[in-house]
Length: 68
Image (cartoon, rainbow, N blue to C red; front, side):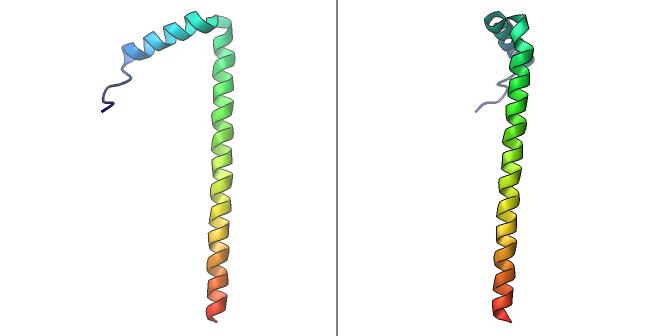
């Protein structure tokens, strides 16, 4: 469906439009902000994943204690 969606020419056009819209001074700030938000999102996902794993592990431990 989306085969070949982002070819090199498409990416150049997108970059050119971003350069025209935001200007050369704002692009590094924009990139930095996007990078920080992605890192924050990944950290939050990792924290939630760890919490779920700990909950499942604790539930399994309680189930094994009940069997004894």
